[in-house]
Amino acid sequence: MIEAGGELRLGTEGIPVDWLVVMHRLPGTAMLEKQIKSSAVEYQRVTAAADLLARFYLDAASVRLSGNQYLERLREGIDDHYQQLIDYSLPEDRVKRVRDQQMTLIEKHSAVFADRAKAGILVEAHGDLRPEHVCLTEPQNGPSWRSGTWTTISARGAGHGGKKRWIT
Image 1 (cartoon, helix red, strand yellow):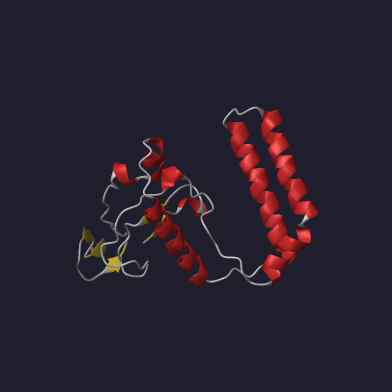
Image 2 (image 1 turned 45 degrees about the vertical axis):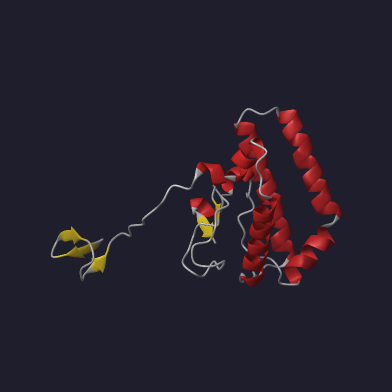
């Protein structure tokens, strides 16, 4: 939308004030969760999606963090997830037990985690790629996430500050 002469208009000269996006509903039958529940998973598509994601993340710019920064980010994430699960009224003792196990793992292997940060192999990633977030469809313009086709995999959820990431 453009502001031109005090009015909002589409496709004219002026100052952009907002962006419009054309969206299409993803086919429910192509959602991985539905395919799993109906025992209709096409494993070659899952493998292709995994390969696609692997290439995407290999090409992603790395995040520069010190070992201590990375460890702190991991700890904060575990604490945030713990609080979210408690807010869902899940049994606090069970959730706390899992959180404590995760924290113990981080402390026990802190050097391994810190070395990942030092090696520069960390990327910003969704981290919440569950079956209900994956839609397996045929790419329309080839299997490239840079092609402008955004249909092969949708990774959506609350990660990245609420932003949705669409990958082909």
